[in-house]
Image (cartoon, rainbow, N blue to C red; front, side, top):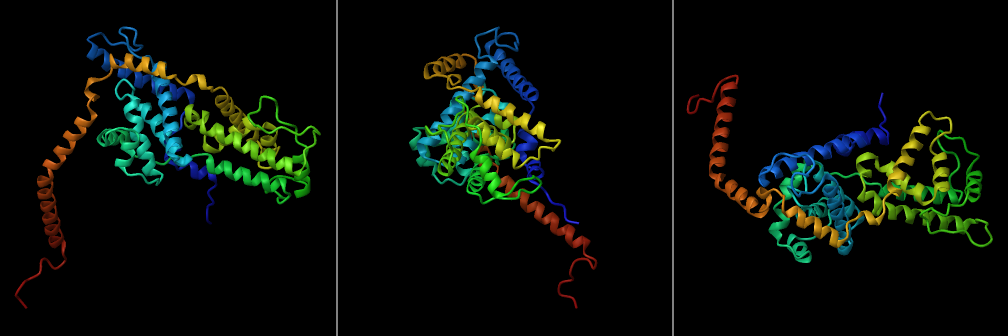
Length: 384
């Protein structure tokens, strides 16, 4: 019997679920441990006793490190927009940067040196072509400074480059809602409906979005929602949700705490709650045991996204002040990443001859073993 895998089963096999999904508690614990290790190293270089909070000398606190990383997450977004790269590159780069700083601290690797590397790596991962020389020229950075941290970034990412994103799912929801609005969908598997006309009528009679909703759509003076107005409402909700996915979803811990489908539904919930509730009713039977849990998870994600504001991103002056403070306590062993990268490359090049000899020895050994295992032994050359 063939086993069918649903979307949840497939997502659970992804590296994003296995390696980069956390509870709020485990995420906080991981960040705390990373910061404590960085502080311990910084205190050694500063000649002071170990400290876990940075009070013994003037060093960045855990919260300041997190805010500095968030500032460069935003810088990653704006740089990607400047290049007019696809949204997938922007989201992938943001997640690479966020994942990197789960196991590394800005005290060791300042984000102003790392964000350029993760953005170029995401460009390659998402098959968006730009040569290294062109990229380096456009960001006014030497090419070797872009490449130097790349292997370290790959190590921190555990060589997993896949980033599951909510954008295609949101586009699918848009198409489904438009089909419902136009009366093209009748029976929904597992959910009782009154047919296409009944679903369309229910949509037309939906409660209006609240005044605090993120959508820009507003009903006309008549107060009556008709076919064209319903389509406009759906498109406006999609646009508002897309803006949320482009901002708060990338600048908070949403990707670490929730699945892409939960994130997109939370964004749609913030955009137009009555419309989102209707859509979920076409997917989740009212009698489903999982319904309360799913709705609670979406609401919690929406609360996280809705609590974000632009004021949480450091201003240019605040960023400069934190980076001056960082210079006084950063790890000196990582100050010259370009030099370290060059030394590593020279070491590899110098060992090429030895590696070639080792390969030849291994090939000869394998050949001897194969001949020894031959049932009739080695061939008898020159004898009949």
